[in-house]
Length: 247
Length: 202
Image (cartoon, rainbow over the protein chains, first blue to last red):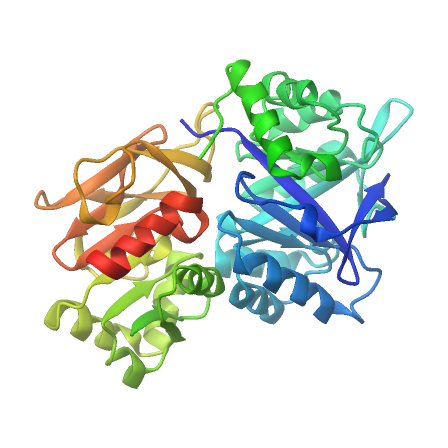
């Protein structure tokens, strides 16, 4: 059986690792914190507001991938095929797409046609308003005008390799994952589901795996990024009968 | 020299990084004169089958690959799509023929609630003694990322298997031809060990 995964999501602003809260930048940290050997994957996202200093993100990716032998996904402002090839030459394994799915369907279809479904993770950034949800793009700034159900149906048609569901409300809150929207999205997709936003303790991870039936839990909490932390989260999950990779 | 074949759509950088880390000299190439000098060839993979075969044709790589692998018997390792392209045909795109080095075909996984497609993540490989798996404990986990699986028709080969609703050949060897469905360059220490084995022992 496939093991459940624990994945680190790291956001960079002009090449500097940052932490976000509700998708707004919080503190600046150093990437030296991170030990990637026990993580089951790493997601690197460029959250800079424009591409003026994109080369700094390339440097980050290059340095990361030199010594990282777990899958690396990159995201943020990916909108041309030539750049995807640059990322591949730097050591990247797959890409995270969100805005392109809204703005340029044709390009997304072309990317999937060339690199295959398994290469593309589609991001769903969700925000709650009273009791209803809406999906967002452009770093959480713009609302996708259609309903949750319609957007999910549309995304399904792209045949993505995986879905990364991020809760903008829970981001940085440490209050746990939003299981309601997770369950809703889970029931709609037969590809792996990754969730991010709100994981504050290991019980939250277990909840997402057991109740949310997710395939991977992502964390961007700086305190979760050390070897000791990842190991402790994995041992906790194993005790709760979740299948996890330890080496 | 180890050649990492560049046909335009693979995670060549990741394979190169792994070989650098292991201190094996390699070059990324799509040039005939460089491939001709290869002691070993790695065909990485990450992409659509039809697109992969189209690009091999476009860059005139099929002839030189056949010469190196079939005539000269140079050890070759296909990874993921690189492995799948070694087969005769592939359901992902029936307009293109595969390289045909391995008798058999590549089929699409059936989606169920228990076995999601694509098959993404860390899964176990069950194997008996294989050169490629030297020093790796049986049932170690490797990183997989694919929607299609290989089905071998010939019997004379060694292989390791993985189960994802169906049991398929996840590592393969017959003579100088080696295949690996998961990504060893992304499978931490066991993956690195597999690459080391290919570079040193095969």
